[in-house]
Image 1 (cartoon, each protein chain N blue to C red):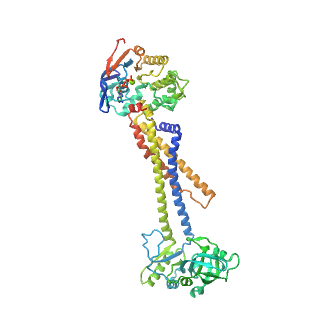
Image 2: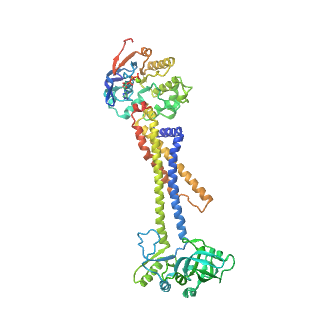
Image 3: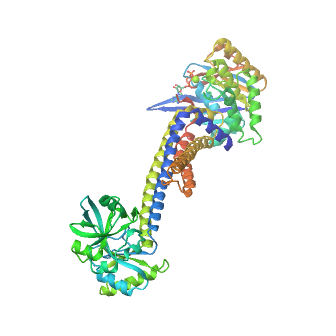
Length: 233
Length: 402
Ligand SMILES: Nc1ncnc2c1ncn2[C@@H]1O[C@H](COP(=O)(O)OP(=O)(O)OP(=O)(O)O)[C@@H](O)[C@H]1O
Ligand SMILES: [Mg+2]
């Protein structure tokens, strides 16, 4: 069974009188270990889809199976648990806590994870967070606040935060949108490395170069998905 | 996330927003201080007044003309026109009430005393030869009235110490004449400087025999009767006997009111308890205001930190984790405010007591646990709503929040 399985997913937004159909009958399945990119014009529904895959939002219609479980029937607490344990989300705007150091930001998901793993001690959390920061190349910046870091460094902190609980899935919604091309390249290399270690990666991007480097490309337009598997763009 | 970690997080959040936390705490500090200080004022006043009454002597009995319904009266009974106490009543008590050590009628009025040198506005108190024994008054020069002075209504006077000083300075006053409301009286005694006793300054008073005072005020109706029981334990018997004697003389009607130290302290306590409760209510309101302050700030904080809530939810915080975080933050703020309030009010009252021992407003210790718990529960009660609001923000909306 696929790791991610979307069946007839719809998403509507009611804006006053108008009903915006942001996702229209999306059906995809993504297997464990895949490296997928989602491309499409602005407003085509890429972020909406990612938020649903990342369990940050719920579909208006349809079913979403994650790791064999129907997430559309889960309680809010279970959704929180899945976000914590199975998914790492990287945002375009980083979404770091501005008043907490890089280390504190990375420790946060593990602190919530201690609800499920009673053996997690403070020192283990500290150790694993430092290791993860080291993995993204930030071991010399652990006590800096986000506003004391460059954009690329902030995104690395965010990636470390997404990775610290060893998720199966890494979701990145335009992770390099705010970064220059060199830094973008580095971040992308990091994603490739993670993918080769077995993490399932999905990247939303406007950048065709990035899309080209992914094995599978999904294209969105007006809420409808087209699988460009194998098709060169 | 486990409780201790949330506690640490809350403490960090409070430190990160120092000014705002301090201002919120201030509301709590003031609330708790109001509770403690106002209750202290209440109990301090009670302590003072009770000791004042106790200094009067425990076997004093006061009889006032007229009957007031005891249940409805909170203060000392007020004389009504019904019922009349006379010199004959006093004489009957002296003759028949064996359990009384001393009995005196009293007459009371304002007046003027003067001699060649000075004129003084004074309170005149008419009493008989037994009066000084009832109230333990010490005569430093001359004597109090004799039985003959009283019985023949002689124009003699005993002066309070200040009056004596005003009229005669340091020279001898005994045997000299003074004019009390234009009627000449001979000074036969001076009272030791005493100060306040039962609300009157003894030093500013002039004492004359009851009969003389009735003549002076042109009445036969006494202001009241003062008596003392032979012993402290005999006070109930004395009251019973006194009641029986007077009732018999008044055609079986109890048209007078008896006040003892016990009833006085009781009725004063009722008033003072009311005062304490009233102050407590005011304090409670300031606590409420402090609580609303906390709620207000927490609501602002929730709105301000919407994005933080979104981020925490996105990485796996459950609703209950967010709820706990904001609840604990509110409680930590209110409890630290409460503890500071307790500490500051103790510091203030103990410092005052140290420098002015007469000004004892030290809070009773029983108030400390309630004020602590009050601040705790204020935090809980006023923290719930903002925390629930925080917990129920949708993750995706919180992440989008600008
Ligand atoms: N919360 C919302 N309320 C109303 N409409 C929304 C909401 N979120 C998204 N939409 C609408 O849904 C559609 C898809 O938006 P989405 O953010 O998914 O686009 P996108 O493909 O990520 O675009 P971009 O490349 O610019 O990020 C848009 O028309 C947008 O206006
Ligand atoms: Mg988008």
